[in-house]
Length: 182
Image (cartoon, rainbow, N blue to C red; front, side, top):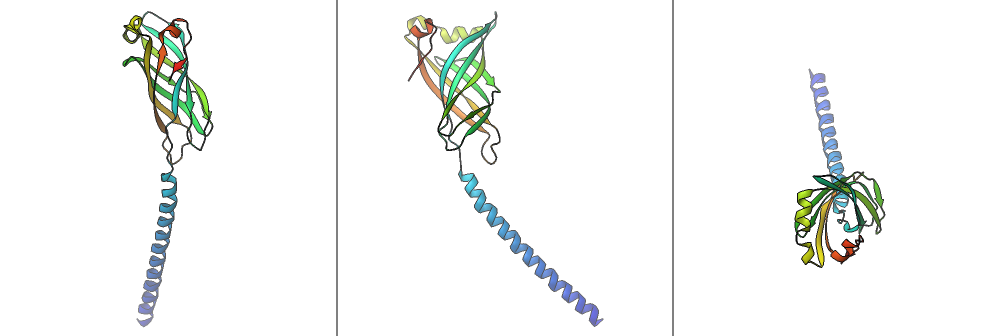
């Protein structure tokens, strides 16, 4: 009986020791994760800056026009952005004009830029609304907003929102040149 009680006591002591050690080990692991995690979570990406680089008609049907838009993406971050796609909305004179998406994979170097091709679709009604009153204007106001979707973002957000606005000269538009004025 004494041996049985001694064995139980030794087992209980070993169990207590292992439980305390496991608790301490878990506390050390949690602290390490929190410290490393805070460093990783503290890293946030700044949204890219976007400008229209080119705008060309690709196809026209009775109800829809397809445009090929080149957007210049400027990366203000100190790491490369591996963009795997972009979705965007274009407004002209504060009215919805076209919606687009691209699955082009483009690497934008840290503190650098690259162009991303985006196919945008506009209904005939949206085109008419966008260009309504164009004859009375010298410039068209545009807005491009959307999200750049990143590849292999790890702990960082995989979507970076962007929002840009500018003007296009109606005279340049009529001459088929579309430099953006800022």
